[in-house]
Length: 510
Image 1 (spheres, rainbow, N blue to C red):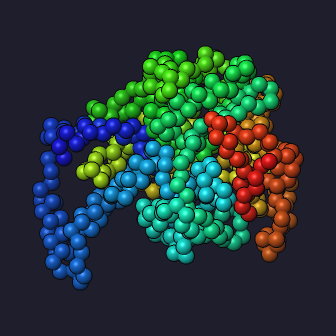
Image 2: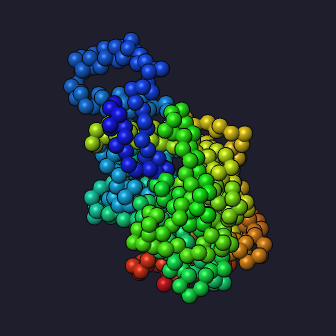
Image 3: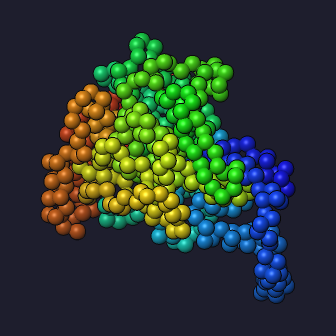
């Protein structure tokens, strides 16, 4: 591989489907200490020739080469992968914030695709797909043993075309079926609004090219009348994205020049440090946006959960290390590794784990995640999101620190029917606790009365009656917490309609 190609990379990202795209700097000189295994390569050539000449059916050279390359990644960590032409284009589309499909981030569990997070205001989210859902069939085809890239390809497609998903959901007695129509997914990563008590709420769903610029404009729009008395930054179910977006978001709340994250690996180019920068029109913020001065001093809470990964963890870890914000919610996913994408030709590449990243204090988040300052359940009646963390993935990269991964179980989970809430809505239990923290009131992990009620209902409920039960503890929690939030998240003036997602479908919030 020529040095020129190695240096042609221009994107930098950290995330579930992205990774950090940096120049690997792998030159011929760097390889001198590790000569190529010529005998093994000759053996590979012999096997290749035997298949090519003698297999019962013809196999194209491209298919053999692609499969051989994929085999090289089979026992590496789950974030290292070969990007064929289609996968490479999909990665480009995702980082640019637009692609055709359903709008979900997925991983794997038990050999099947599992939903990491539905992207807000997309077909999947509106249909009621939830974090932790296991996709057991795609258009009637079982997904057990299906390659993750193949599953993604089947779910992607032309806007306007339908797809049927069969879902296995924790707490549901039988599989759930969803008929979804694909759309062109143009995700808006930053939304916000003002809450009662002059508290600003900002949600980042992904870290994209324009996230920093959009955040600056959002913060400015929220303080047109006066500076907020507090700020809630919501990173729940944010699977990551561009590293530059994470640095930019951290820069909005840290003084310029403070270390945000560092990376360490085997090759010199993997060892880097990234610092907070000034945010204005001359320092990388588009359209000449100006960051309000209050953002560096306003009391602040960051909301995280099991679906907060990678770039989200970089931001949360940095703000926690500097005690700039209190972290509330559940322990994060624990993806603390750096991926470098090396372009093989104009249409293909490889995504290879080349380093671990570390918070400003030197913590590795790999496997451990970010532990919140205050653990708060997803809902008043317990946790909703059941999914694997990084430490549960096959061939995960080991932790290189004294910190051990936390327990896999986070506490009580809602029993029976799950009623999902809108992030930022009136029935958002974790947001309510964030507001309590900013206003000096006690922070509750969950509502003890509702947890006891959930346990009692679970013990009393007969298996045959499970499917008929119309109301579970999560539904009771929603009733107790009050009506739906009537304020909508400000998306910058596009008038986006807001909905509450439920397992039964979409409920519009008036």
